[in-house]
Length: 150
Image (tube, rainbow, N blue to C red; front, side, top):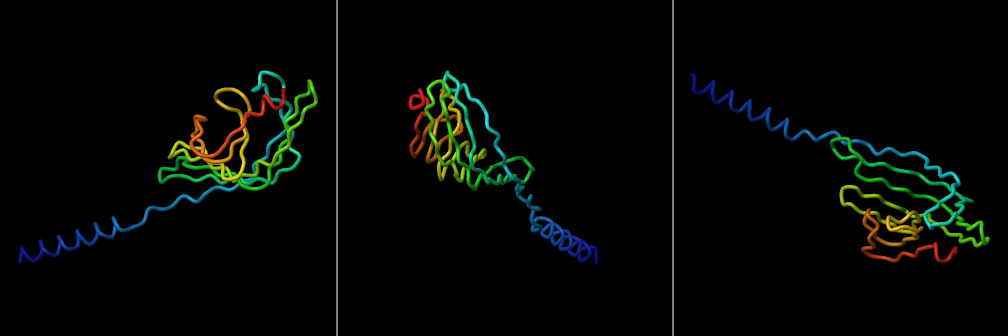
């Protein structure tokens, strides 16, 4: 009889352990919110550049890992930018509508459309393609707008 009771307990324990291990971890839903960019002045070129946003309808989707840490952020929608050097009136207009993905788990910035922003090396860069978060171009193209605005 003790053998049978021990066997039943072992089977029950195995069944409970299996059920616990088979229970899926609750997924953390992505957070979606509007992303609004206000006009600003950049000094990244070494001279003043006025950045206007004539058109924007961007959604920011934030993804989380199982511990609740931000693992990825995706920007999608329309974003039109105008970069102007007020000293000479030169303006460059572009659509930076993306989508743009910041993938922290893989340490990369991915511009599937066109993205624009400051470069860690200095300047304002327009990038299209896969770029690491430190600004090193991996695939795709990038252009520094500063010489074009000077």
